[in-house]
Length: 100
Image (tube, rainbow, N blue to C red; front, side):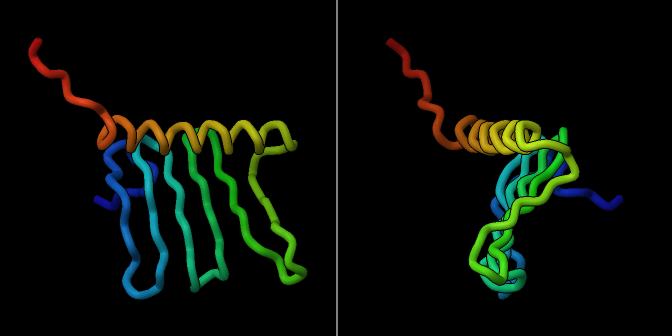
């Protein structure tokens, strides 16, 4: 069975060989960062949609998404950031409870 990065059991971070492509996230929220292959591409994938951010030839940043409208893109970004943060906070930054 082939699994996708957006499946619930995705456990990042992953590095794709020597290409310096990294994936982080879990619970359906994934961010993919590229250092070299796609010239700095950042992709944010959520259960409600995705956003691609890439530097353009003119030095400006290009943001593309299948969702329509600036407000919808901002919502995807906010939910994606919160989802990736939750994934790691729940896994690594929870303070264990100690007996009193």
